[in-house]
Length: 111
Image 1 (cartoon, rainbow, N blue to C red):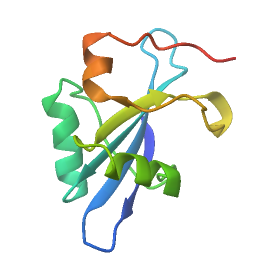
Image 2 (image 1 turned 60 degrees about the vertical axis):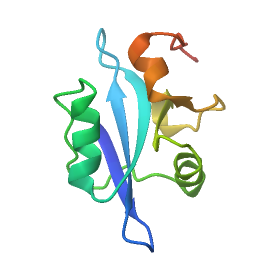
Image 3 (image 1 turned 90 degrees about the vertical axis):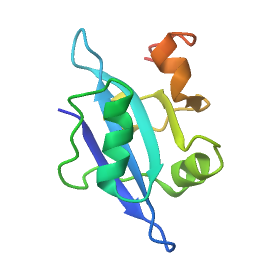
Image 4 (image 1 turned 135 degrees about the vertical axis):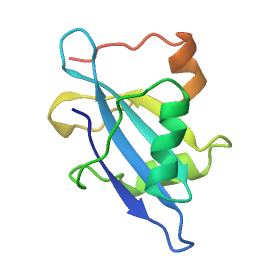
């Protein structure tokens, strides 16, 4: 199950953050940020990219202010980076979602 959360912005839009687990062992894989008109549209954007089993239940891991700034400044409004265990913030830069889907950027394990 993906952990995540959302933040509603003053203009009425939302930023949704999801931690998607690694497929092989269930450990944290990537953190995905989506900017959309509402939560349903944010999840629809991810499902249209092939991530069919993505759901948001609750608001356990909302996006931080730095994450919100990052996604708002990206032209696609859809970015990702490697998620770390224990909720530690990664120092990795954000990548556009097409880099994840096409496999251009290898997801490095940081221990």
